[in-house]
Amino acid sequence: MVNKVIIILKTIISMIFLQTLFFKFSAAPESVYIFSLIGMEPYGRIGSGVAEFLVVLLLVWPQTTVIGAFASLFIISVALYFHITILGIVVLDDYGLLFFLALVVFISSILILYFKKDEVVTSVNRIWKRNGKR
Image (tube, rainbow, N blue to C red):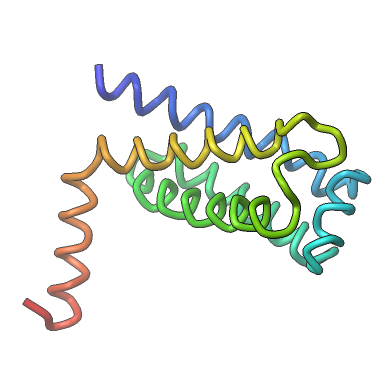
């Protein structure tokens, strides 16, 4: 059952990230506006698109799901930060859709990490030991 939930969460994140790629890579007016407002146009727009595509690849491969979930959580936390500090909840009369989708990705990423907590702990312990810490 948990594996099915994880697959659904990975699919949700991947669909949201893949859907936004068109707007970022085609320099859609909405994307250009957003990244201009935060002072990161065009490099932030293109860079975030590349990062989101890499996250989708990491999520698809089961061995890298945890890395993908951490990366997704980081990327979407930055997006939420900009929504809260600069952009606002509603951007260009979108009724808060982008903010809502960011929250869905944020929560989905946290849930994946929660359901894979044993793998997260094992990975952290492996890194900790590799660096000579005990």
